[in-house]
Length: 179
Image (cartoon, rainbow, N blue to C red; front, side, top):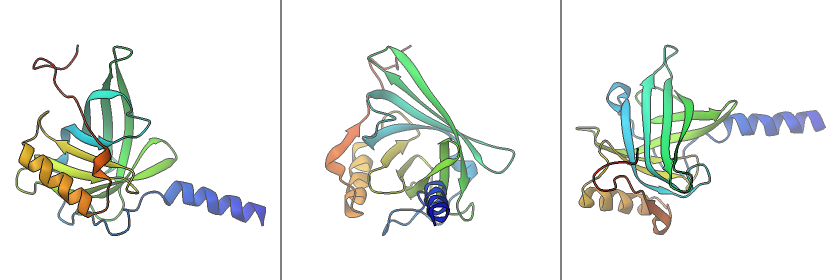
């Protein structure tokens, strides 16, 4: 019985944290080729692996196995150093659905769900994690038009995310990122 419980817990840890939060629907018309490249973090809910970082970006590139290489990068003002995390992501269902599982520490995966996207230009996105404690507002540029930002924040709030706790990320200082 103990082995079965351990196996069940292990399977939950490996696969149970990838689905979208209840009531949150990933977009159904996702085009990976258009999504690849660099995105800047405009806002996020706080979590320990990005705490204190500014100038945060995520760069996505294709993998030969059909997955996606992920490079997250942010500047730590306290240490004066850039921090990087390399990961990989795979689609949970079809490549046309913006729902992926991502890992930075194999074999542990978490959900990455594109829940709003500028379908015309792929210039901004709203991304949720496996629950409502994880939310990112991303843009192709370090600054996003305020009306778009507010529209995405409003959408996130309507979906049950606590947008009062959003951290708006410093992207530029004096017109440029730190060296």
